[in-house]
Length: 110
Image (cartoon, rainbow, N blue to C red; front, side):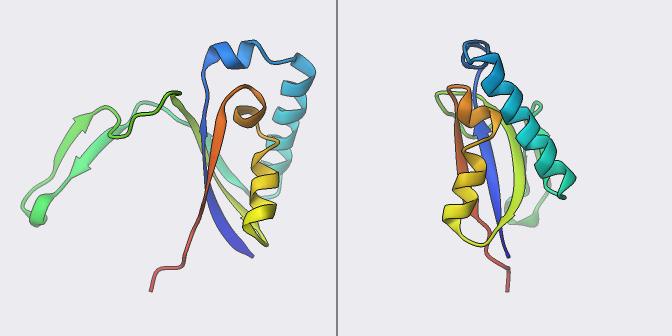
């Protein structure tokens, strides 16, 4: 089974404009994923960490990346294929609530 990192993007306005029944099913989908062992969480305020040339660490508040929608959360899911992973991601709250979910295949490190 392959692993995939999902990054959900969405905002409150999109969430609030989504039908409650659609949201309820999306949240139930997330509950089933967590019960099956999926690691997921809601994104909080990030920090940037640098240690250029191993010469000393610096930490700066705020995100490095920027997007049209804020990062809402992350998950590590297991699926047989990228297509299966995208099907799983398509039923999550960010995907159904006017947001978007990126699905990143994880390769094993050497």
